[in-house]
Image (cartoon, rainbow, N blue to C red; front, side):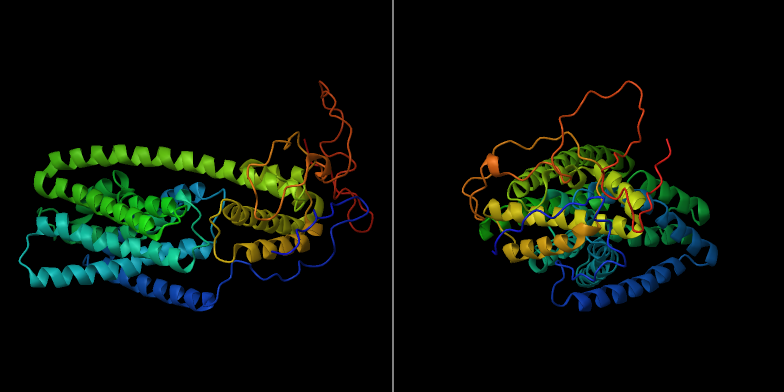
Length: 463
């Protein structure tokens, strides 16, 4: 680990946002072979589109194909929004999320389908047995394999329970999308032996699968995602393997209970399985919300210690750790520094968040691969971005608590007397009581970005 960086120089009216585009920066998250994997992902996605169209055509006509695709797509925006909302504190790169959906909709479907065809041709099993016992033990491992490969190759991506839940849910969502197309097309063609076909049968199937149980497959795979997230903080490979095995078993059991209730008990079994999985889904949601809250606290703890080292200024922490203040910071940067400053602020926030989690892993004695070198890389990129960043005025936050870490690997934390000034704008007088009626602009005259290049003051925001 090299010598710690000093806190970046703040903006002042005499130091406007530098003109011209942002410098080209190398992504510190980039890994060898990344480009090849991206190409393979897009090729696989293209194959998946062809496969989905083929499954839709099995409905028998164009109307059935269009209806099957429409019903399969309808729940996607809301469900994707749920997982993206959950992943807001430390958002993963978009290509990792897309890869999870592609794997679930193409690779896992192909693996499970080939395994089921082989088993059904080898053994004389009923449809109920295939759905209850064979489908879970072929589909869940195929889906969970993505998280295993992601953890082994890109361990830097999965930081904890939230990341495991998000990636597992997106894999399950991709699988459910393709499976729904198959079921909707089959219902339209009347191959489910109910004697009903056409749009009415497809609509009934959509209500059961797309409205009443859209989170079924994501929740099955989420059991393994939770296991992977919990295993991140385990040093023992044996303990990690046991946790993974328990998570995979949980995924298969949940899937088997869901399919078995419908296959052997009919409508009553469906209601029982639906109630059971509904309770589990509610518990999973509560767990996800609590884990997301803890993720935010963990981030603040790491950023606070980083500020004590002088690697960033303490008053920047709210604009990095708080979701609402992140948005406000970007809007402020766009208003007072233009599009370049807004983009730089987003990149600065992203780098600070990732660097903080890497730093915390080192401090907790559970570092990710090459964590100290990657901390340095992110700090270097933040130093390049900082002159373009225009933050709002300081908030009334205090970070004078003792360090959360003992005997830190990066060296002793400076004593309180040598902490960097708790503002990026220099010393300030104590806060006065706010006036009853605002009588001055929202932005103080000495805030950064008040004078743009050329001496032209920016427009004040409308009230």
